[in-house]
Length: 192
Image (cartoon, rainbow, N blue to C red; front, side, top):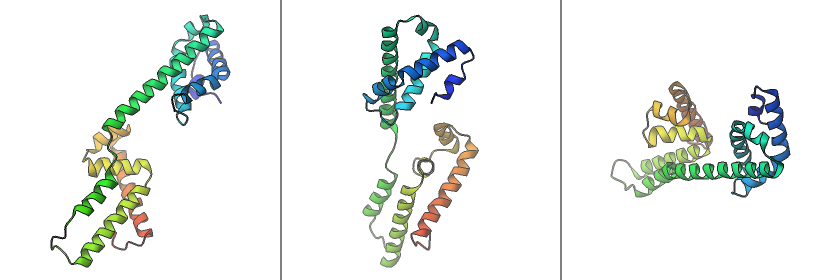
């Protein structure tokens, strides 16, 4: 199946050229992306490569078969490398420790006399149930909760990270909290 971006090409000749190029070289492009360990991301890599190839249609039309194949492979390799670099940079700056931080805080908490042992045990169970519920939330809801309450980002900052409107963040937060509460209630935590 052809990517939607091919159908957006206005010139009929260019559209049929890229369609044929995509169909004829799809397996080669997929194989090239997989060589970089990007099996699950292969179609995204191919689509991003097609964007680059569409920009070079006049050049591509002048190339012979072997040179065209080399150009396509080179484009997919470059796109794959760009993707891997971006993923590495994001991994450096992403925070993946919400559940671990809460569990660590629980382990490091010493009873301070602010409640009976039973109350402290119930509180610990509630927090663990909350961590379990958050862990089972869809990625978007879990990310929104982490950005808001752990990293203390503003709605505008979260919206910019997720590329949505700030008013959507309030809606996502409400849904995430509601779903976490439902998940905790299903586990039998009455005070959630």
